[in-house]
Image (tube, rainbow, N blue to C red; front, side, top):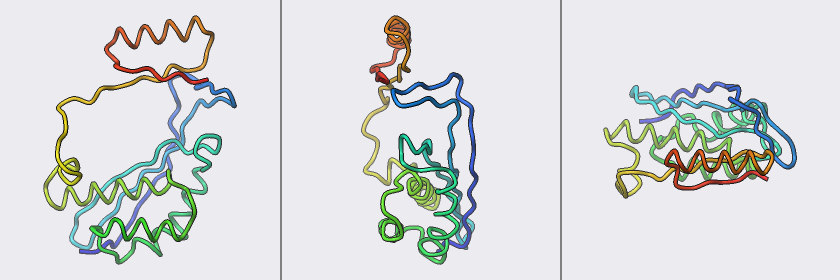
Length: 166
């Protein structure tokens, strides 16, 4: 089995409300969705986190260029999708950093492997460790009163942790 096609889409998703940071604000998120296909008809889908230079040092345009000019032709095409570490090593040699851009490929390869073997990804990573995953919520930068109100609302809703943006 080998990789014979890679499709990807840049997606801009508007946030429900503007995210304020100490160094700026953002009202949309740029994401890259990656779909890797094999010559045997198996595929995997992955996606990146938000691509924003102030947070990740990456942009959606840069991620697209990496996919088109480097990752697809030099690290993915013709490779076994099960050689995940080899593919990641190739991507690391092709560019320094850019971990968010690389993550979409990594996730798609793990998804593909799970589909090929008919198992959930957690089985590939050592098995299920718990039945539930505690969730946290990010309280966005605002007035101290509004942040305290939001934190209480999310704790009351059952979130187990709160992360504050400063």
